[in-house]
Image 1 (cartoon, rainbow, N blue to C red):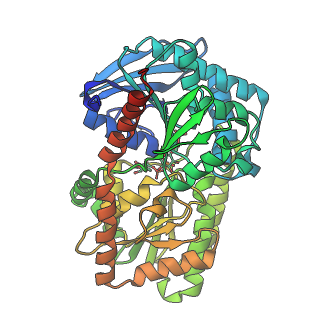
Image 2 (image 1 turned 60 degrees about the vertical axis):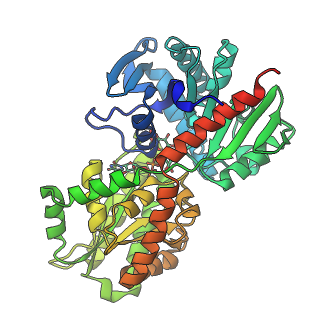
Image 3 (image 1 turned 180 degrees about the horizontal axis):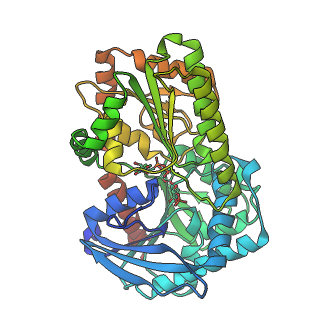
Length: 469
Ligand SMILES: O=P(O)(O)OC[C@H]1O[C@H](O[C@H]2O[C@H](CO)[C@@H](O)[C@H](O)[C@H]2O)[C@H](O)[C@@H](O)[C@@H]1O
Ligand SMILES: O=c1ccn([C@@H]2O[C@H](COP(=O)(O)OP(=O)(O)O)[C@@H](O)[C@H]2O)c(=O)[nH]1
């Protein structure tokens, strides 16, 4: 088999986040892809965050260290239809099993396909014959079929960062037949969890595709074979631990710590997205204050919630919901020297975040659905092993499949979340140390390097067995 490092890795995603660029996006895909590329080197192709009145621009290539960032600006209407429209008003909600949030418009679907064709054309202008192409996320499902139609024969893999819904949910989406056929144009399909893979299998088992399941994760589909497997994204554990330890010495982190005045910190960090269930989280925290009166004045909850997808109405609505709910809870419980919730409607730098994590007695991660949730993994890696804080984690986040030693809760059950937080706050040191060691072990075994190498190896394996004899 060819060595993965011999060939150039070309990563394609909607969002490209250059680390030296101010205000780089707060999102797990960008964090994970950057970490994978920093180790291996290669090209990262995608949208540069800018909009143009005219046609999408040609790729502009900027090299920083071992990565070439090749980015394009998108036409404003195209972007609205492809990103805000079909990607975030249709695919995002269905993938998170939230069908009531779907707002379908045929023009958006058209725009989604058009922009994928644009991505294919622009990408082809920088491709080399032996590049390995790795496409990321639901924005770009049709990319491989567009590239194949244009004659590209390179290996092409696809990784889905969000959950994949079962057929019973997916068939609600106008265009789902097209999407399933488009997925079958890839050589390798990757999912975060066994549950997502199983859900995908329920879709391709249907007559639309009529797949046959062979050994070794190989699926026979019309026109060929593909590999569909589970590749849970990981983190660089040592890097996070070092960042966290270093950040505790910075003035910003020390200032935050002093302001707690000895209270226990409960921290939540999430894009302001309905899948993160932030209103329910605040209500669970309110339940904690009701059921465990001793916690009043002794804990502080800090919720960091950077705005996201502000062009989509449902996202603007949850912001005002959250402001109302935190205001009400603070009004109900605050004392002259204590405010129960600190709500920050902005993103903060990773370094500072890791420092905050290290000081937090509880990391609160309670989405109603999440592909993985890197915050959960980072929180664990940022802890001091001699006195670690405890993760309270939703059973519906992909991360819960791996971090089984966290305090696992059902985010729909406020009592369960409140009890989980109380358990974490009161957990004896020896138990915290043991659970932390178990979780660190899992994180080290399945880190960011393993995620990348396993995926690229699967792509090369697929190429080997599909070569003509
Ligand atoms: O690019 P945005 O629209 O601003 O959104 C940010 C990213 O959100 C999603 O991230 C997912 O990827 C993480 C890493 O695999 C995973 O931990 C998390 O559960 C997912 O929600 C989205 O999938 C990305 O495309 C966005 O860039
Ligand atoms: O203010 C913030 C908020 C989040 N993040 C990072 O953004 C990523 C969020 O990824 P996650 O998988 O938890 O969720 P997503 O936003 O991708 O759904 C994590 O690496 C966070 O450390 C950050 O750097 N600053």
